[in-house]
Image 1 (tube, rainbow, N blue to C red):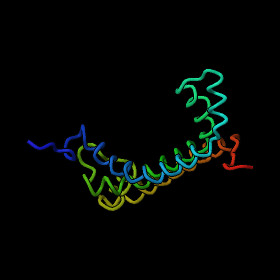
Image 2: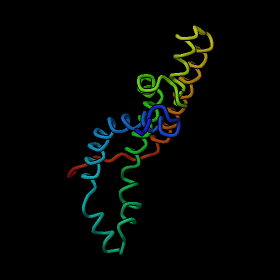
Image 3: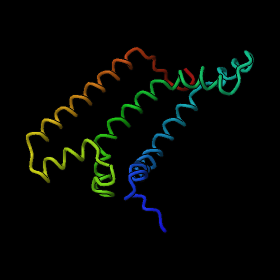
Length: 152
């Protein structure tokens, strides 16, 4: 018996999100690779002299230097989850098998059930929430220090 990935409620959301994650992984990996190349070797050597292990280097050298990039990437992924997921889910499951998301629900209310008033209110509320989340993220980014890579 074949596995019904898109009709089983336990696996349908994973099957819909997996292509989005795979498509976004390439550019993200290139950006992270470039940022990791920008961390100078002296930081790692100083950590070695202090007796830091592999996980200590990641926790105390890599993560603090990549924090601005992680926050910016998280913001982009969060916004893309609301604005790109519904098209993929609509094409793959049509909202069935417990894969209905906010954008798809708004689309269904407006264009299938012709309830434009509630759909507009939901869209404004979703937009306001995304703007609020973006402003919160930008306020966090103001306090971070951005460094350039290279020999300055």
